[in-house]
Length: 334
Ligand code: UFG
View 1 (cartoon, rainbow, N blue to C red):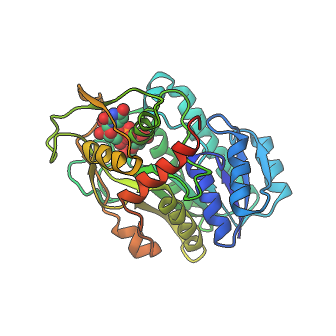
View 2 (view 1 turned 180 degrees about the vertical axis):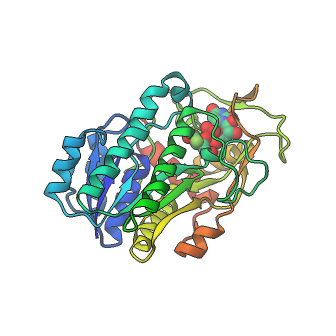
């Protein structure tokens, strides 16, 4: 299949391009490089030994999308492009609604005009807000607590409405838990701008000597060691989940929602210990207050994805930290 990948130069986008090409599909990428760089695309080309058609620009730019769709025939779209920082979304909600919601609507309009009916959408476990129980099932109440999460939920609802109205439209909404790790080549990985918000890139920058110590937000949660528990998933498992979702869309009608996680919870202290092991570096840390908005535990029931896609995460914590360290130590500046 020939697939348009929006945001294909980003962290999950690059790994998904590699997985798509490896599975024998073709990709065309559109990315505005707002949180990625041209070098990342070149590295995907190096890994896959082929060149990738690329358009630089914003998915909200309808004229650009029309040009892309008129110059290519697509069998489906994987939509990653969007902004993803929770704190920034609270400070700049209008930017988040334009960039994540309005741009997605533009994409759906252009897909309809050009009769492209299969869409895999990058959503997030953040749509569940503070879950009343774990593991989290897809039919749990949806109550995101910030504009970023609400922007993801709005796109989910737009897709559901579109699937109701247009029976040709097929969508799969993938709710990711916490993507970490990097491609085994060490050529592509997570490269956040500025000070990382997320745990794994912060730890990896401590290990490589860029930052002095990790601050652990809260050690009084009702969890096994008092620190927050999350469902970390290797980015290559996540990428393979997208390929399987896309392949499924061709014999599936309507709009379906699937969690992509491992189903295992890992605490902050367990992650620190695993990273110290893999990197053979000390990870100094201090405890601080809980971070506002954080929940104690968040992990998936991933059985739907297994049942519907035949997909299941295969890489464990040791592989996640080893691949992250391979990437970080080989690319200390991203
Ligand atoms: N943490 C620290 N110190 C840090 C960073 C994180 O102790 O410097 C802790 C957090 O308190 C939490 C855990 O590490 O317990 C994981 O935090 P992350 O920021 O890595 O991930 P979150 O689970 O908070 O958020 C992630 C994504 C969001 C997404 C959410 C979905 O960053 O975009 O998962 O559940 F919405």
